[in-house]
Image (tube, rainbow, N blue to C red; front, side, top):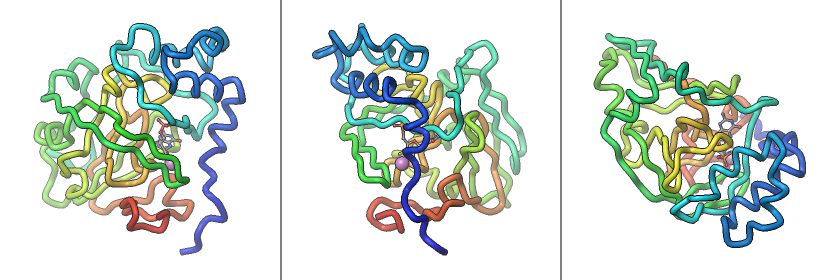
Length: 235
Ligand SMILES: Nc1nc2c(c(=O)[nH]1)N[C@H]1C(S)=C(S)[C@@H](COP(=O)(O)O)O[C@H]1N2
Ligand SMILES: [Mo]
């Protein structure tokens, strides 16, 4: 397969505009240097960044770049939000945010690698393991993979059932001790630390069990479906 000319992930970042980028950098340095930067963080794009500041008990991991493919980020409404699990399952699920929070909670610290080269060290994620969701849906024997669909269409990506069962793979609802902020995928994002960040679908709202893995957003643009860090075509 032809390699893409250049990673084009920063398209979404550019769409946010320079103001938002300044705000994102400010969020990275946390409350320590917040004075001037915080007072700039007032536009509607940057407002969610204050989720990371203020009373946060944990210093946020820094160095994030916010990526999107659509022109607006999904907004989380706990009253209407659902995680649906469907496709090749015996029992399709529609889980509220509280339902997800009631599943067994796990926490892990890992480094986050974007295929374009930036790395964020020591991110603390908390959430649920995929198997703890799937045991309620009971996948059919013919299901070999999961397709994760973002409410930020058309972003999606898939994992094999075996990859999804890795112990450090999470559907994360907390990042660095706080609910996942809007720009990082509120309320739920996939995290698979051993693969490049493009597998880590933000704003996950639908998981479909499928017979074959499916190319995700960046895979349709030339990246490997098996995005192992250091062992794939992005490495
Ligand atoms: N819905 C959605 N999820 C996404 C992306 C995106 O553009 N949209 N970008 C991916 C890429 S390439 C990376 S590196 C990470 C970046 O995570 P961040 O935006 O929280 O920094 O999100 C991944 N998940
Ligand atoms: Mo990325």
